[in-house]
Length: 396
Length: 214
Image 1 (cartoon, chains in turn purple, red):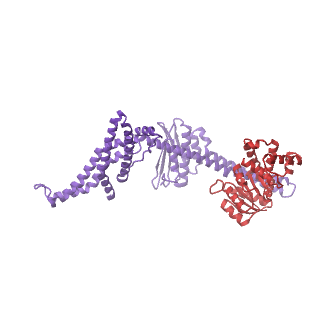
Image 2: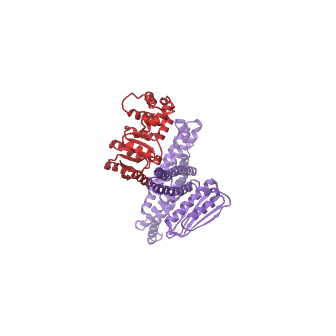
Image 3: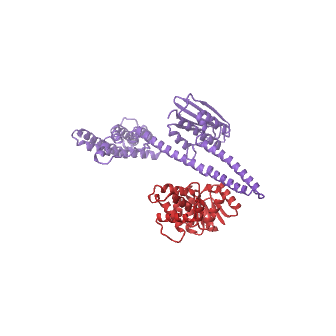
């Protein structure tokens, strides 16, 4: 509390400097704009826009450090090579122009904050000491009233200043950070990076499963059969036929296990039941889950196949979590399609406490869902029940 | 013959141990990663180490790296690198320090038990055994490489069998040729690959290596 008040006060006391420099800079920008007619102003304007970026950075950092404003860094300035490219990039640099806008619009906000600080602390102090120094003219209410009023003002000052700084914080957040389109681009870039990494990770997993599982099993199987064949070549000697039968028996068992393992592996890659739609695939999934799962689907039409796949894997992951972590005895899966959105809800009567933090699997799920512009909502109070809702677009 | 097995798939490791023991070989240790393999080799100094390429913790080429170090630190231990896939680059790395007592085979070769056992025996005896698949890949690559285009298809067949560590007599038997004509092919191969005459069989391996490096 004391620290934040100190910071807010420091920010306010710096305002004459920061806002003042901004004002001077605004004049330079204005002059450059006015002189662009005779071309001298063009490089000047470019330079001052790049400078605006710098001022914006200073103001952004101050707002972040002292006001606790949530401002993301905008994309760095990346001009092409050469003077003309550099100037061109600077002249159309949205971040620079927005910083100029900030310097202009913030003036009333800065005045407000300064006035509030002066009024609250200054006024409070004056009132507090007025009985001693006889600052107020005779005939005013007595000191007994003035001093407590001053004290009240001082006590209210921190809250009042914070309120008066709200416009400053808001302006820094909207004009000095990433613009909405930049934020969107950043989000899409992250989603793309995730999608690529995820695809590679899945391929690697499939490769590893085939290499360590199926392939190793088949080699062992071939080895047993190779041994059996050699035993059969010696079948006329006592004992070898029995040995061959034993080996073939083992190989037969291995072959059946390999087929079962391969089936699970295939289902993990892409369940064949999805060809018939989400409903069929989820019914199979519900039936294979070790606890009873009530399934309800209400889809007026089929979503895009890729959305079906995402929804299916969300259900798989969420049900696996239910079985592994929740201690639930029942679960319910609900799928609905409405207004071009698909909602998948998985409920359980377990102990709750699921968090979308690191390593919970929910984070990966959130990224996967985010990659198709979907969203995930986790409600899992300690003690349960847990309700997780995944919202996906119908069409990608 | 004393053997150390390094294979991380438990099923296959147990199967190998069973097979080798049943055929009268002495499996002195069976381990699941490269670190344990080097410890086991240092402790037992076996005749042959059978090494899976991909093992924990990295699951990349752990086994190959361990095999290369074993060949450096224990020159008397034969090494059979045993893998589910063939990379000529791996073969080249393995043979870089010489080709004495080394082999590189696909895992499924174990299905032909006698061939597998004889490969182990030959490696223990200091010979080189390369999987036919290595040779196929080298040949596939060599068709593009200029120096090797000059080999006739018959010479390639002979070189392929040489790479598998077969003797001239065995090659003659396999290709239904006379011993003399195999000899002629072999010296043709040496000449075309620019290997100077010498009275030692090491040239055969050098011929294979020349291909690997092409």
